[in-house]
Image (cartoon, rainbow, N blue to C red; front, side, top):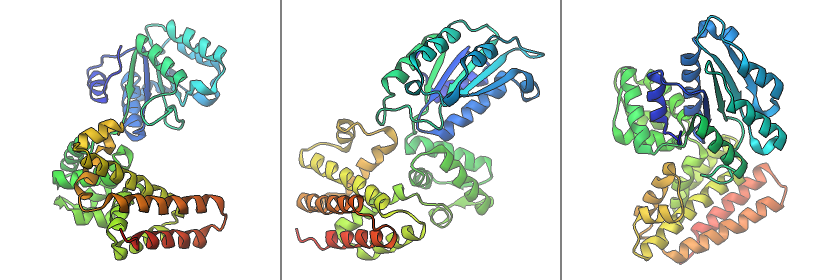
Length: 352
């Protein structure tokens, strides 16, 4: 079966339309884990799992034990479920990979195998699996079902946030739901955790942006654009206040510099796109932005109009110089934060 969406997968699980083999992967680990749990409980009810649910660690998979579990007959249940977590085809010998394929090619009708990844990186870049993992995914797709749990767009995730908030007796506007999604970088696990706090705090009223700002833990990655933009605009008060907060949260200087540089690259691409008469969608497509990061180009496109190309280029040069400094010296701690603050001050003092 071809690669299916998580929505289609969820519908099939609810309808009891099961395959003998599932292969799940993707960056949105929180969503992936939720679906795996639902699928396992549908395949084998919790009361029957002691005898009919077999779990294996893919990092140290015993092929003989795995084969034996796949061939086992269900006891007082309709089926056996065999679960393998974190199987990385790049990390196992070719002979083991061939043996796994042989087992999966001849599964009993009463056995379902679920292979999923949460703690290993199967990707060679932001979108594509490594060659060996892609071939294995294609193999699994011919026998059963595969699903890539990619990050959703903020707009799509906002619909889920609104629905969950309503189920917990609260409401939230579409704008604030998207704001929360972007703050959590569209990662379901972070969204669910923050939404649980927000609905407990709001207690049957509307969740506001102020609630989100007060209660939710802002990941440093979500600060990159705001910091980059304010550095380019010379807003020292905001920049240094946030750097101080991040230092108190024990973020390393090179981490902060990395996310700032990442966002300034977004702004640089957007500026070049505008200069050449392109829309933000063209820029996102040209640079192969994943769905959950298209908003970065859109925001940059709307904000870069009054920032000169020369200023962006010179700022990138200053950041690159400091990045090299941090990676070639071992001062650490306060010394690195001081170097970062000096870098930011130098960038804001540029005359372009």
